[in-house]
Image (cartoon, rainbow, N blue to C red):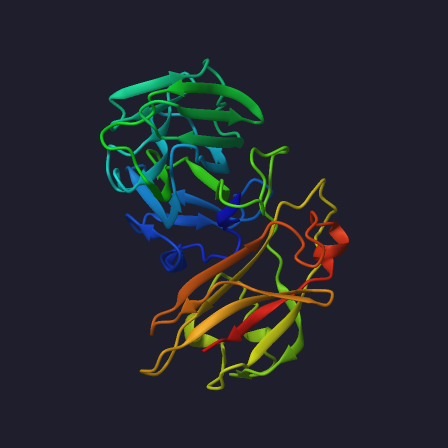
Length: 345
C-alpha cells in the first residue's frame, strides 16, 4: 500500500487561493475555514451552495485485484447530492459519470456509477447527522465482475457491495479524487488517499484518523541562502504559501536545507505515516530538480524527483514506516525527525 495524497487543510489562507497550487478548483467559492476543521484547524468549504469540485490529480494503477482507498472527515447540513468522486482513465474527475458517494435527505449514503443513474447500494437512513463531523472511509475496485465498494461511517461498515462496479471500458488507472459540494454547509478535512501498491502504508484503517500538521521550528544544517533572517523563518509560513514574500534559494546542485520539526501535540495510538511537503519553483531557463528529504537518526531518505517550473508547485513524499527501522512509527521517532529538501540536479 502507498499513500498517494494527504491534506489536513491546516496551512491555507482563508480565501483558498493557495489551494490552486495543489488542486484544480471549479470556482473561487471553494475556500478554507481556518478554524472549522474536525479538531479546530482548517477545513475546505464552499460559500455559495452551488455544485463545486476540488480536484486532486494523481495516477495509480487499477487492475483486476487493486483497490483505491480514501478517508476523510465530512460535515453537512444534509441535502441530496454527490459529495465525493473518484476519477479513472475512463471516467475523468470532472465527468458526471465518475463513480461517486452520495448523500440523501434522510441521512443515508449511496454509491453510484454512470453519473448517479446506476445506484449500486444504499445505506440505512440516519448514518449522517446534520452539522456533525463524520469519518468516511471508502474502498473501491471498479471491475465488470469481481468489483467491490465498501463505505464506512465512523468506523462502521454501512455499504459492502460486490459485483459489477463499472460502466463502459474497465479502467486501468485511477486519476484522482474530488471532494464535491452541493451546498454551502459541506466541510471536508484530513483527506487521505492510498492504494494497494507496496507494503509501506496500511490497508483498511484500524482507527479514525486525524492529520496533525507540524511546522519546522529551527535550522539544523542549511546551505540555501535565505531572503532574510533564518532559513526556517522563510519556510514556516503562517498560511500555506506566501509566494515570493519569503523564500530560500540556491544555484548550487547538492545544496541541502534541513530543519528540526516541532513535536506531536499528543501521543497517538499509532502514526500511519510521516509526510514531507514543499512548494518550490525555479528562476532561470535551465532545468532544476528538487527532492524532499527526511532524516531519522542516522538514516537519510529522499523522495522522488520534483522537476521545477517557473511557477510554484507542490510536492509531497510519504513514509508509512520509519525508514531507519522499517517498523511502524513511534511517537519518539516522529519527535526526532528532521525534514528539508535538496537541490538534486
